[in-house]
Figure: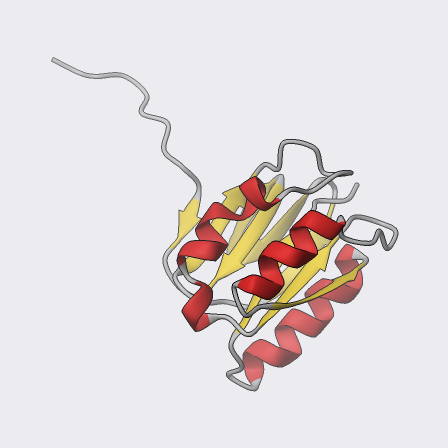
Length: 129
């Protein structure tokens, strides 16, 4: 008997540059994704922080699981730069991760450069319209 539609967590199992962003999503690896992304050494994941305007350590569980493989986290905070909350900065520092907040566009461009250099980089990218 058919099970019907199975909805799975959005995940691309590998590292890939971001080809385009905007219209509420991203293009990478000849695919597209609506919504925000968390780009980690283990792959690219669909990401929905509880409140994109007030990020918390709980929004980064997958990142903390891979902290040993990440030196730099680029946080694309949307159209404008927003500083990271103090509690999140502390949690990232304790995990040995240097975090750089910037606009999503700047984070995408920087991520692609660091990825091409094979750096230990991760990115949290909030989708923009």
